[in-house]
Image (cartoon, rainbow, N blue to C red):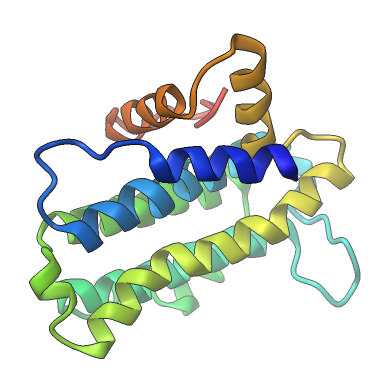
Length: 200
């Protein structure tokens, strides 16, 4: 935990690109949304298909349902940011059952949000409480989901992507600034093909 907090503190101090002008948008996407997006997609890929129905307790959602819940809320929030009807309501995400379909839908939901972010600047985000909430919720909610699915991964002896990244940083003696650059490169790269890990 101490190492994780030190990494996050380092990432927070890493300099933003010089061309960044929209402080709220740039800071949230680079410091918060982008890492949790990569970690959550990495978690979805790391869990074996036969463990997608795994639950930590009978009353909890299974792993696949947690990932689909991220997909559902991404579309709710980013449809608000785009000012259009939600194209992927819960009635549709509830139909996703296989790992392949769930992973694909999650990636598409993040792409939908990325397209929404591309049209925004700080002025548009701050135009209404609804816009601010939707924008920040894409980070807050996905962090909550990732915090839950980490337990599912560890219960199945799978190292979470965030821990894997920290281990890589320590082994290679990389700085937080180097890790930030690598994450940004992954974030800006083309979506990975089937079976690819978001962080490795």
